Length: 87
Image 1: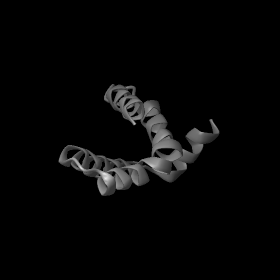
Image 2 (image 1 turned 180 degrees about the vertical axis):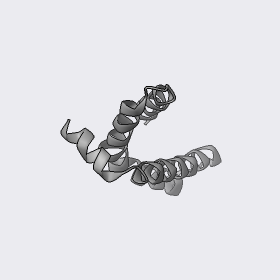
Image 3 (image 1 turned 120 degrees about the vertical axis):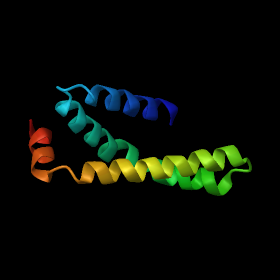
């Protein structure tokens, strides 16, 4: 999970660049095609099975961050995302 989130953070930093529109699209694809496939279930499992408050809190934080990222990318125009996928 660490490497996946580190890559996502890298994409976020690149997207802050004025020319980062393509990076935002890449971030959306990575989120949709990779992280959302398993990270929410992973976070639920960690939160449910953890015996340490630290891991429970980290799992909750992951859930919140994933929800916000999904929501943010869902607001992007779908036609633009579809065009980027074909390109």
